[in-house]
Image (cartoon, rainbow, N blue to C red; front, side, top):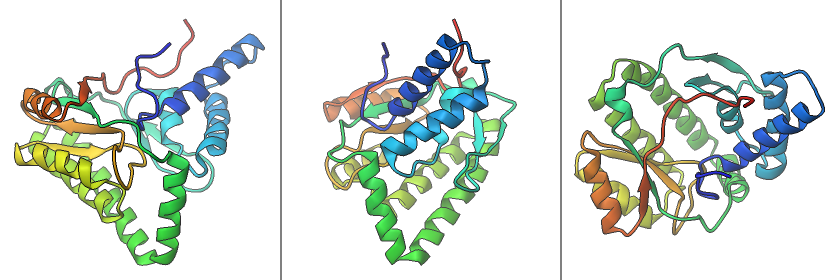
Length: 233
């Protein structure tokens, strides 16, 4: 059982893959090995998603805040960050569920891969900008710099919109949050039109995000960030 909404780009497929494999290995009395669980879960994700990053299953397995980089077709976890998200920041994050996208992650990856094949310069620019933002986000989180966190989330969303993975309908919601002084970005693969799944939102006053969600008749909820990974109970 899970309280996580299905099919809205929150990594539920990775969660199911990880816990199923971990349960099977435990039943077979295979030595508890997080790296093995992660490797097998990634193999499942590739069957389901096509060419996933591997970040979802890695986060489910190891938990905490992950500094993650995919160097090759194999997974490579650089390290778990030795700090948690400061409460000053954590309490201001909120998730808005825009609904289940019309297309799944595998279909979106296929479409964007085709786009990047046609426009390699766009691919290089997009990936470079996103990596720069990730590197800037690390000290912003560590130092609880709210202004910088908002700037980085906004820029990350702008980059995602540059490759067309955020629908016009959801852009309107994001612009409303930005106009109110906050920031929001799509999670997962997004969608070209209609619902895009969950939005990760941030505002110094989360009630403003709640009001915007209510205005659009959308569900919203909080989630704990940087929690423990998989474990045996």
